[in-house]
Length: 365
Image (cartoon, rainbow, N blue to C red; front, top):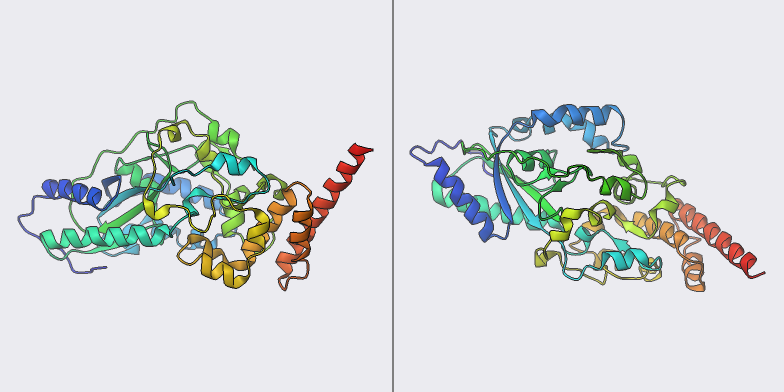
């Protein structure tokens, strides 16, 4: 981060903008756009969402709302946002196959590889260094889902993506991408905002397992599987557990059904699957010790949820799995776990398994 005031006289800002876009592609970004640091059009929707409590236990969303609405309050001097898009769809990511097999663990495709926060911020830093080499010191700060920034709105304003009905950023090449930003004081000419191209399609709304997309462009996080498995601390509401299926970290259903994602191409190799997370069994992952969790998920975004939530989520998925000796054995091994949260979810899963076993026995009679 640099905080010097940029007073670069004689700079051809339009030409610099073109060079920045070229440099961004050199660093692997699929697209670079420029926007004014003014997300005012999206602020009323954010405030309404917060007032309705749809952020759930994510108190930081309400606490930091003023910083989202005023970029210069987050980073003084900000007048322009350079927004970047980096695809992540991993090669051979057999999402459908994993979701169809309830004995396997489904991990959101973005989390199969390296932690995107580091990758994007490192590349944005390289982009900032290239700009500085060209024009001298300037005021900037890099972000990637790491601070209160209205990322999707800036991507829309900069013409790199539009907001889909699932509220994620979307392009004609799909939604399997990350966003990152450089807040700057450079007077670069902005790009034209991008119009949305969802039309009358409601595939994402219809596909949501928990009906979390309550209306086009509106998500109630309290029902979203990504929120339940990643953001929520403590107990997952019992009525939502059966709807989670085998999803142990995040959910991609609203993206997997999106027609635009049929045009997606393989993303950056940094996000290739690690540790077999694209097809491991629930029982195998449930057997990981805390040391296994810490070691194998080093450098992964999954690690931030902690071991307790990891076991909690897998316990729910095991409860939703078919009744088999393997599942029963896996759950039995955790019934006396030190965490009350883990024990509660294991006990629920055991009851689910017992009910399935009884139903199976009744059918045989």
